Amino acid sequence: MSEPTVTHGTHGTHGLHTSAGRLHEVHHDFEVPFHDVDALRIVWHGHYYKYMELGRTTLLRGLGLDVQQIETLGYRLLVVDSHCRHTWPMHYGDRARVSAWFVSVAPRLVIAYRIRNLTHDRCSARGQTILITTDADGHMLPETPDALLHRLQP
Image 1 (cartoon, one colour):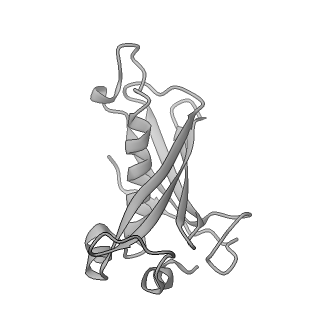
Image 2 (spheres, helix red, strand yellow):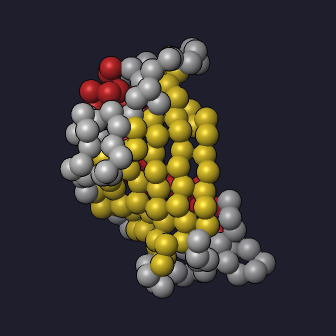
């Protein structure tokens, strides 16, 4: 898989919610590996969540919030909701790009995704995840803590 590309959205509103833009948008290009296709020779639907995780990791890591850094701050992030809408199939060897950006960072992190089949220049999927923050002991926090919000501001 190739290195991610980072672009920063510019339409955010105070970093808390962005309806017009894509806050901290990043891109991660990859090639569909053989082990991701099913008996129909298309990418199995569950692998799209793996591709979304590639985008989410690139997004958070680019802001200095990789897993270890979040844990060092005394927090954890947990996915509590996810969905994916499939719009165009991908096949073994197709070049693809997952884009990820924040829709909202408070009170929960809401990340949107677009997976584009670059080989056929078509959108293959759109999705979203909602993440909550817990303390180090696993207790859910009512809002994204300031220590994380500070790094998420545009």
